[in-house]
Structures are given as structure tokens and as C-alpha cells.
Length: 207
Image (cartoon, rainbow, N blue to C red; front, top):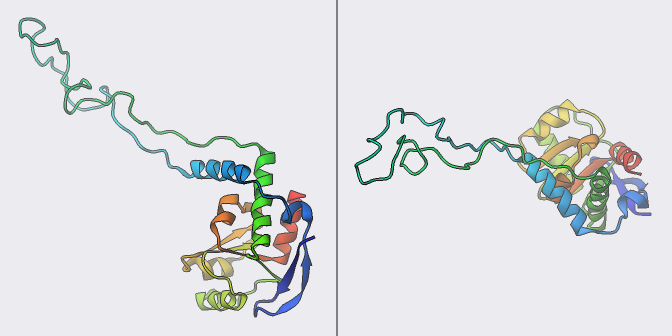
């Protein structure tokens, strides 16, 4: 079973945390992770791009010239697709790029992502995260004590307004509840700082 040093906010070891093999020691599978991350990225797309068809562009009510005798092809409107300023044929319309990935695959990808962080020594376990105020300076001090560098993801077990406000101004730090952790967020972070309760909750859900 993987073991992590349990630290306090000062970065001192206060014990050892034993994690379940079925969640934090899963064999790597890049295809599974790729499929889930791709689906998550697709669901983030706005899908608001839009072009106008000939029915939507302004003007073009009058027939540009008579039907016969001009030597040109017959035309009924200057807003036909072949004219400048005309409508667009088969252009993009608002749509959702979201698609389904099986639940078992999503759960497996999350286990693999967490296991990778354990193997890379990028998962930092803390006994608790308690701030006396909402000042960012206090959160920066804690992260320095824990030696969390680069993009950092903080995982907590319940909503903490002080923690949320204290990390809001840190560009490379995100705070999420353990129920809302995603494969993409974990893979995108250089360090994952998680409380003991949050890790236990994740373990219970994924086992």
C-alpha cells in the first residue's frame, strides 16, 4: 500500500497516511486518461460560433436583374451564397461539443491520475488547512512550508470560504472540493495538496 507522510501546515511530519492500492496504486493507462481528458476539454468548449444563412443576412429582397437576355446566369437575390455579402452555406451554428464517456472509464482515469501523482511524489497530504483570515499572504506561507511549487491544486473535504478567498488571487492555485475533482485538473497540476479527510472521502467513493 502506498504511504504518504502526513504534514501539518508548517510542513512538519505529524504521522503517516496509508492509502488503498485500488485507488492510489493503479497501473498507468495513457489511453484511458486521454479519452477522459479529451471529453472534459470538449465539454469546456463554448460552441457559440455562428454564421448567417441566406435567410438571415440583410437585404437581397429585389431580383438583381431580369431573368433573360442579359447573358448572365439567372439570379433571384444578391444574398445568395455566390455573391459577396451573401449567406454562408453549411457554416457553423451554436452546438454542444460534449459527449459521453462511460462511468467506469471516468473512475479508472481518476484513479490513474491520482496514482501518477503518488508515484511522482507530487501528492502532498496535510492533516488540516485552517486559516485565521482570508489574506492571501497566509496561504502563500502555507504553500511555501509544504514546498508546493508550480501549478497547485488544493483539495478539501468541504466548503471553506476563508481558504477560497485566500487562494483566489493566486494565479497558479485552484481550490476544489473532493467531490469535484477531475482528471484534467489533476493532470494539469504540478502539485496536489489534499487534506486527510479529502483523501479518505475520495478513497471511499472510488473503492
